[in-house]
Image 1 (spheres, rainbow, N blue to C red):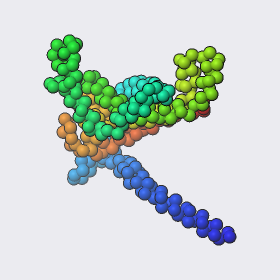
Image 2: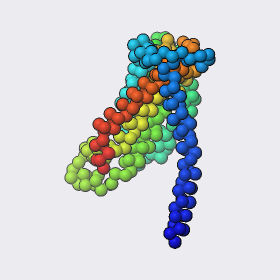
Image 3: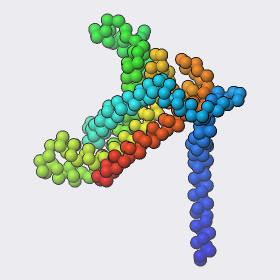
Image 4: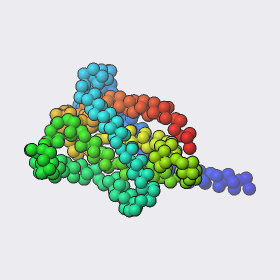
Length: 305
């Protein structure tokens, strides 16, 4: 009997190991190996061809003291992440609240709000680039026809209008999935709490701010973190819409690093694996610090309900 139990246990563990093995290999190949590869070259000046030159900590010195473009791209990244949280989270919560209350057509609204999530970011970037085009864009045509503009405005001709359009597209592409997360959180709140609050004379707004929002705190903790880290790693929408233009002023941290590895873009810089690896390590440390600080300061949110 004991032998059969041990055999069943061994067989069960073998099956679990086989099921986890592909994910484990993927983790080693696509996570651990790139980190080790980057750590290998941080002390070298290497373009991928010829002999690498040992430069010690000069790559880090260059990043902190001589590369103004990197810090500007990091500032753009923080701007997009902060503004996206301010706009997207309240919007997702309010929409989830209305959909959860089963207003007329809520099923159709749920599909409409979630639909941008399944679209390719390349398609969305191309569509919005055409919409805001300086020559034949629909937005310019509408603004001129309404009298708000006398002539067409080049939205992608300066830093802040271009960044705000990137912010618009990024928010539109992801607020639907966050709305679904909040909707699931709302559906887990017991109706008895609202019934008791109604009997005590609490208005709908007081119920929303004193029952709904506090009980959504555990969901907010996860959604805020995922949204923040996701926006800090934003890449594709910037490459599709602006590619860092004009003059590299709309670069974000990830596109700045990406162009050092693959040597493309307006700067046409040579491949710089060593410096790109150093910037990757710096950005990884920044993201780790943000995550730790956020989880530490939001620890109480998960204990509310």
